[in-house]
Amino acid sequence: MASQRVPVALDAVGQAEGSREVEIRPRVSGILEKRLYTEGTPVKAGQTLFVIDRAQYEIAAAQAQAALSQEKTKQEQAQREAERLKPLAGGRAISQREYEEAVSTARQAAAAIEGAEARLAEAKLNLSYTGVNAPIGGIASRALRSEGSLVNANTDLLTTLTQVNPIWVRFSLAEADFERVRGAKNVRINILNRDGSVAADGGKLNFLGSTIDSRLGTVQLRAEFANAGMKWLPGQFLKIQILAGEQEAFLVPQSAVTQNEQGHTVWIAEGGKAGPRAIKTANWVGSDWIVTEGLKAGDTVITDNIMKLRPGITVEPRKTDAAAASPAAAAAEKPAAGR
Image (cartoon, rainbow, N blue to C red; front, side):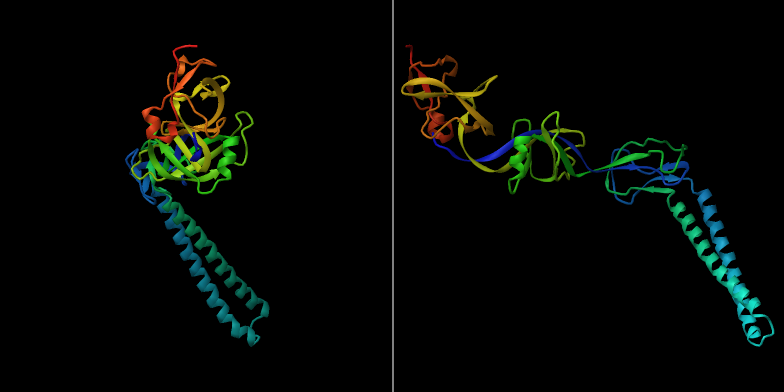
């Protein structure tokens, strides 16, 4: 058996979540008149989702417009008065104080216009808020308030929006595995099907945790995947494969590896005798275990009749068809009839 370059692959179970999740709340109070979207369907950014009764806000805007017009009229009158008194003050027909008071009144009128304009802008803004729009594109959930309900500004939750393309997958890695990922370049993330085949590749890490969970000894990570067809939904559990470079290791068929409380073990044929050897495994590549410790070049791993083996039993080397076809299978051994 010879070592070879194999991928550093780590498996984890992650949970999908929206890349953006927004709570939709009204920004003005009033009676909810209409719902303009279909629950559970995609909506576009800027699309109107709900309409709140506009009447009181239209009236407030009209009143603010009228108040602005009044202030402008007062300002024009005060300006004319100041211009009329200016030559009189120059000819000493009136006191300088009387003229200065007229100028001050004109300035106050100009300031009052600015205040009235601000109140009009506020009234128009509140009027625009009667249409509750989607701040992002995404999937709109069910409406939590029905038409005819009184909703309060910035308080009542109307619905939620979730952006599912791209989708985020949050998962955890043990501290030792996290160190391997953090120090690797060009880390690739895959989503696997139940049978272990790749369902989606090209995932990118967009978050690495900066703290270790003291209870579990794990670190939080998050990957991003394209999800144009909404194949994955928020809350769904997914099997994740993290590819973080390559390593020098041995490939051993899964059938040759046994596992117990102490760890993983293979049987080695050495000097015509069978003996167990503890190994350290990483993960699978196809139908083979990646063995990172416990084997050395030239070892003969027994892959046949594992259940019949006992320490020291005489074995007769016999290569299997799988071994001949794939160097990863190493050599197969057949136990002798007895000792």
